[in-house]
Amino acid sequence: MSQAPRRAMVVHGRWKGHAPARIMGLFIAFLQEHGYVVAVSNDLDVYTHATLMARTDLIVQCWTTDPPGDDQIAGLRGAVEAGVGFVGWHGGGVESFPGSPAYLQLTGARFIAHPGGLHPHSIHLVPASRDHEIVRDLPPEIKVEDRQYWVLSDPYNEVLATTTIPARAGDAWSDPITVPAIWTRRWGAGRVFACSPGHHVPTLEIPEIRTIVERGMLWASR
Image (cartoon, rainbow, N blue to C red):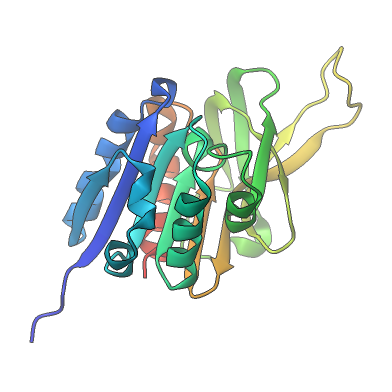
């Protein structure tokens, strides 16, 4: 008896600055190559369709700056708690819904700033997590030119990589700040993968970053 194909729901839309459609195109092909049937939605109401969510194995989201309804967030949380994987990066995942405490609790961090704008910086793998399947055999330092996210997070996250924000002349903080850049989180029966780099296509085309996101999707999937 053949195994039923896994199903992924790609949810993207709103602010065009994060190139949601183009970026998602990079990863839809990857999912299809790995046997997923991929559906695409540009409407957050998809999260309220309980029957559809129950048939879904993975949600990949790139959605910025559109406040969700309480029923939409409740549907998303319920799906993840029941075992659906959730993946998001940068503004499409980490920054998506800052006004929703329920979403922030699900994803494990809140974006608050990106000092210095778009600039070169490094992502450092956490030594204790080097054997995790998402980052295994990757170099300890990954250089990117991206918006460097300062996030507030909680200790329930498993942090796989960090980034250090320098204290520049004129900044209100006097010491460098090291914050999570890539992390995972268990929520109910589901898995959450988050990645703060990914402001634009060139970052997600860096081989190490693309590998991390691809592995993160496979890791998170039901």
